[in-house]
Amino acid sequence: MGLNVRGVELSFNVTVIVTIIALAILVFFFVSAIPLIDFGKYAMNIGVDPATGAAVELSEGGGPFLPFGIYGVLASMPFAVWLFLAIEQLPLAAEESVDPRRDMPRGIMLGMFTLIATGFLVLIINPAIPSGAFKLGSSGEPILDGFRAIYGTGWAKILALFAVAGLVASFHAIIFAFGRQIYSLSRAGYFPHFLSVTHGEHKTPNTALIAGSLVGFLVMLAVWFTQGGEQAGSFIGGVLLNMAVFGAMFSYLLQGLTFIRLRRAFPNIERPYRSPFGMPGAVLTVVIALVTIFFQLTDPLYQKGIIGVAIWYALAIIYFAAYGRKTLVYSPEEEFAVKQREGAASMNRDG
Image 1 (tube, rainbow, N blue to C red):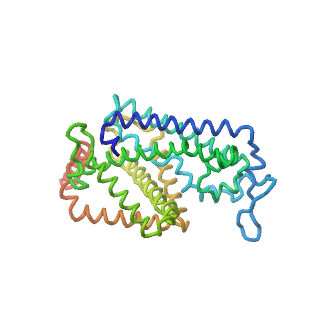
Image 2 (image 1 turned 30 degrees about the vertical axis):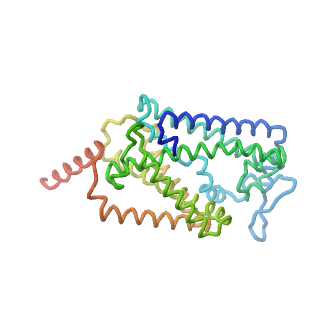
Image 3 (image 1 turned 90 degrees about the vertical axis):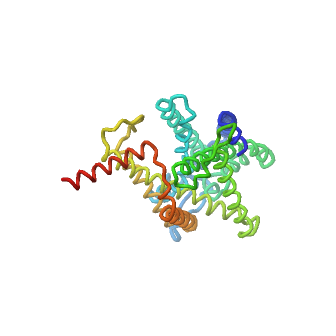
């Protein structure tokens, strides 16, 4: 938080350095795993018990490629989205880019390609080494278990210190993102206006950064003490992090529907960037989000997280209905949309 308050340039430099370290650790893992890879024996070591329908370990491998069929693929989507979660934060840095029209699409696509490449390699290589797909299926730290399979427990602990760089990079970027998000919503009137006060010297949204960090820290303390100290870790992994997945899916759903609505209502307005996938891409986004949310609803592990997000959304809607809607400050885009709507309504009355 302090780095983000100090300045955007410093914050981004740290983010780039830590991200490079995290990617280097992944490359080191991939290279180290190559001599041990046996995809058929280790990655295909899951079968299905015909009596119970539960997964069973096949000691010699040779199991089916999709032991639970297409249903198993769809049921894994709430977990798979973690590979790409929060890539949409990147446009929050548009004001810091030299040429947003050019830099934002390029940055988003490079980020997506990086995630696709590293995610695919982790998915293929990690289960194909002696730890095996069956054990990794219930692992809370699959990359660390992969390092243990290659180097043993002692060296794996040392490598884990460097592997944590990935989490540091993620948290650091998320702090920047929630600071900008809180600042923007406050400036527009959706949140209390005092949250959009910036630092006098560095011009960073220090109030939003401090407020967001304090709220997150207080939530973690509340979880720690109400869930029994050390046992809070399972609650954090099983509920709080799953809240982020549901919140993201709900956000993607609304973004897809909004894209469709804007394309239909304003097909000819100037857009600094046009999606190459257009309406079909938006429809596919909506379908993927709905399928993922459905399987979250059917998974007991996710249900508490969904209830938590629903409560937070309900409180936000109540705040907006009671107070926030009276203090809105329209951005140029919102003012344009409001005027267009009012003009269309006037024409309908006159006609």
